Length: 144
Ligand code: RB5
Image 1 (cartoon, rainbow, N blue to C red):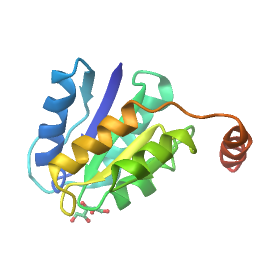
Image 2: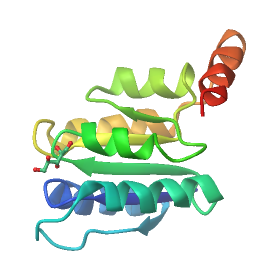
Image 3: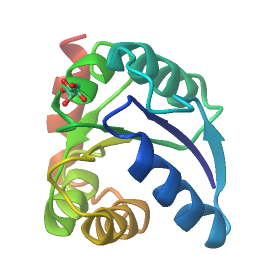
Image 4: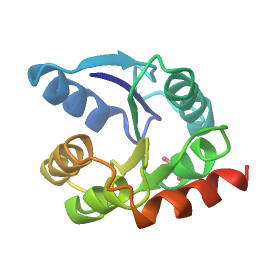
């Protein structure tokens, strides 16, 4: 499975740790930056990762900034993206099951790396439930 990852300076450290965690599990990671703790603007990386998912280069996107909030706002501007900012594994599971999220945004400053690993485990191993959620997700996409 192909995963596109990105971060700003506030998420850089965890992006590196989480990238290694995913590679160790056999995922192919497309690292879209940033590549240091030098101050950058999170929408630039949200866009790169989201376009990778929207074009099919990646199956899912993972974005890390200080809170995950700005990354989610920017990612959700890209056609075809359903980004969820989550801070628990349970919400990650529900974001996949109910909302068919294709990008997860994480906090590198307020959520520890072990929790973010558990969030990725839940996100990447949960299927969309479909059924009654299908028409609701379609209605989200019709808003684009
Ligand atoms: C950067 O200081 C911070 O604003 C950013 O990482 C993120 O938390 C925005 O939502």
